[in-house]
Length: 216
Image (cartoon, rainbow, N blue to C red):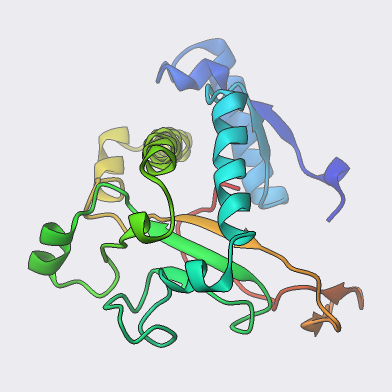
């Protein structure tokens, strides 16, 4: 999909959760149209500092450019028998053509995960591969993105004239299946798949995200 086909929406009017103003109603209407007609939209005015985004990108790049030994410290037990995690963690590119680091909610600690016994909510020992300062940056970024996600979700609820308080059913820290995920598309000797739509070689298999929505 060409960039020009994806609508860009300024959501600064709804960041402060003022869904009743004229500007916010325009933003809500644009979100509604983009969701129905395109399925994607870009946002501006989201309130997340560009410096923070760049710092997170740097942390991700440093991790993916680190040694295979370092990355495999976070791999699920399928690839690292010393680990207990099976759903979250580092995934090598032979899985689906891309390397991935699936962290989950960074508020989840070892004690909480062991008591909950939910296969999808796991504690990942990030400090085995990532330094403490970087982990703090990731924790802050996850919190910001989580809040942004709930605001966008409330926007959609508002569009359908429902009670925005119901967003808490889907957005609850620790209990959520929301995840912070980094993907690295390394150079491939041959395409993982050929697009059935336009015949373009793909560096990753065709897939559908299973969540309510994805913030890229």
